Length: 104
Image (cartoon, rainbow, N blue to C red; front, side, top):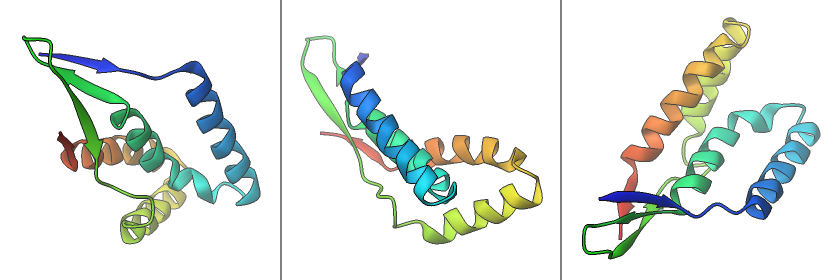
């Protein structure tokens, strides 16, 4: 099996511009939602190709606002650790996103 990602430069630029603007508007609070959006953005543009060449799309079943409690907890951890907790937060979100993904 192979994993194939279809990320165009234009999609990436638009996604980043949206999140930079949101970060400025919300004074950085949007950055706690960004890892969810980023992981979903990549996973939903990824597919699994089996040995026969059949391509199956991956789907991430998370949304930005379903984990408010998780986000608030990591906001507090990041504030208490002066931002160092955010590094761990990013990995935990990826773990959560992959565990809540499926192959169609």
